[in-house]
Length: 144
Image (cartoon, rainbow, N blue to C red):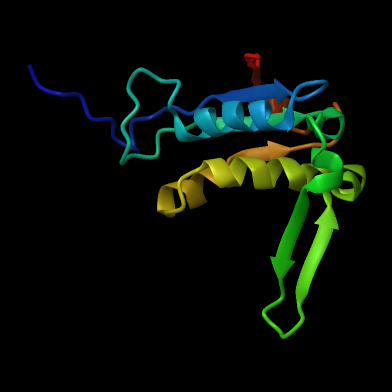
């Protein structure tokens, strides 16, 4: 009996929708990352991009547990001297909740070509409306 290896050409990609309202940001990001990677599929192959599309709605209603709103910071550097930018997560969740969700999911994907390709299949929306109704996304429940 031989081992089955999935091929990128033969994979049919489905669309899933995850509602992040009143759910922890991290748990939602883990679920999205697993679907993007394809780990929920029985034919998962680590070296093949066999993930699916994910739409995350209500990102603004996702919750951060504990004191993360005050203590956690999003930091990035411009590359110039003194170019460190810091944004508190309280401000980030109020102004750009989509970015907070994308950063959480991107950090949970592999940092290689497969992860770079997988993050392009993530669509994040702050509200409940999205523009992917034509793809007929299936609701996916986050396990708490």
